[in-house]
Length: 244
Image (cartoon, rainbow, N blue to C red):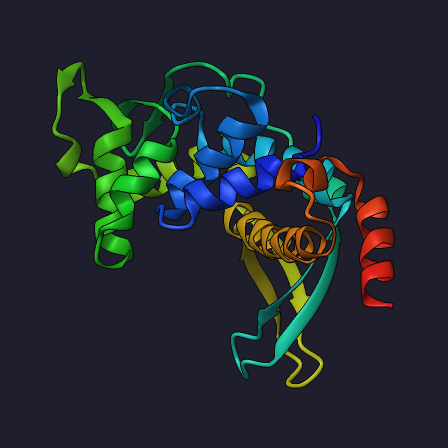
């Protein structure tokens, strides 16, 4: 996977600043992979996040540095996580377009959630409604004793089994960090949303690039394209001379 260039980072920022987070993730991949967002939207959430993780590693390095608030005392907890430690292996049959599961007396044929499903769930009020919408979109067929059954009639046990099977097939869709709060002693899992994490890093980098272009363009009257074409090291050298 290649790193995003300066112009690409600015293009992503300009395109994605007013997009929904789901669409931003697709914008990043569309630029990085030179693929149509529509095709990328059909990837499972785990497949999408695997690609985002690879682009992020190539662009910003092999470690993620950030913080998350403690759930108990709200103390900011810093973390540094190697990207390699976040990669999870999907089940061998994860790439199949549909899957089958027998649970609580019914047989389900389903597909894995993708970015379009995340977009649909984003407007839901509360986790229960979101879970219901996701099940209705991803379960393609329900049969009981060979007879068709309604998705809305699935028992809580069948829905729980479905969620567990989806997690097995697409584990990268939920990345968890183990954090320990030294202030209150609480230890637990925190979900890492790589799409939002990567976007925040891209915003910081885009603003830094614009500041560098602004300073060097004023000092030397160079066009933006020439400044961005320089290596980061060369820009820093020129910036140091301007500020000297």
